[in-house]
Image 1: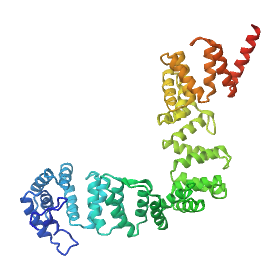
Image 2 (image 1 turned 30 degrees about the horizontal axis):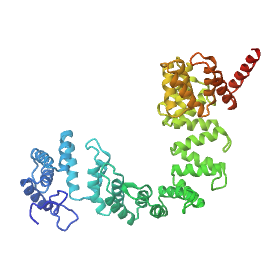
Image 3 (image 1 turned 60 degrees about the horizontal axis):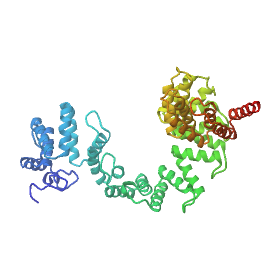
Image 4 (image 1 turned 90 degrees about the horizontal axis):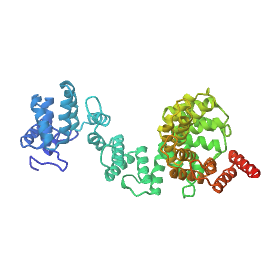
Length: 491
């Protein structure tokens, strides 16, 4: 091999073959000399390596940080990515910080696993001295993986699988995950199962292979795999359906602290689904799930505590967990909390608090809150009446298919209240709301056609819509029809 030999990934072989501290050929002084010769031949990786020796003053090389900085820049312009990283770090950091960082980097280039592990952590998360760079992090951690570090093998495999900061690479993902699995990593087994279950990284989904890997991981104690197997075994009408197995997997994962498994087993005990109904066990697991931050548990557990059918009624606990979920931006919890304040349920009645939570949820896209917020603006509750804002929020909710919002918006358009008058569009909105079985829409249409103020008077249409509303249980429509009958009798 010639003295200027370059590997496929651009590494300068003569110097690097002498820098592996785990090799019989390890000789740092010879490596420095080889790097100097390569730098003289303008080889970018050799320039980068020799710059490390110059900056650190290692292996008999005198410290010359000015020349080192120039070499880093030359190597970077020649395509050396590590050199470009160091050159940027020199610009940002004081010399004493760079001295420690380059000393650590030089140890890493000697494939010192402790140094490589530390460098991985730094570039994976970012520090005050270095910027987050997943590709650089993987470069260092690969050394640890090649030295049979199971955590490194699993982490690198997962990063390639998910494309975390780097391009996805199924071949490399499988290579490292399987090595980690062979070395006993339950987490790597789980990631292999994920790959086949979800079709990650352009993998053809294969439930059989997913179950094989999930089972191995579950048997090795991985709680995520146990939860996944619980989900698979509880899916109806598949060859893997087995409710007893599902409950066993969920309970094992729950006992390990898996929040969603705690929710699943808690809901099963609440409803008696796959296990005998047991309210005490339901409370135990649902509260653990809430405590572990699972928001769906907070919402459903609170609803059960308010309803008092499946679990004993407890407004205090419901209010507590709804507030926790609402403060974590859960739209449904914010909506329910707003309703409780608005209706004076458990909390002291407060339109201001109700408005606050309706607004929070509406801005998150929660449809019922958008409608309620529009009503607050329309009625002037907690805030001054603002028909334009009411129309905006009715429109938002209507776009998501809320029939009452569509009916209100339709009336506003027909009458020109808070919006530019558009009777044709308003009637269309009202008819769509009526077809969605919202009786007030039929009532509004009946009144419009009866009064004839905003649309052409049409008694047959008025009677048709009022009759439909009355049949759907609208008492106002029934009363109006009765009044129409009395009026006709007087004629």
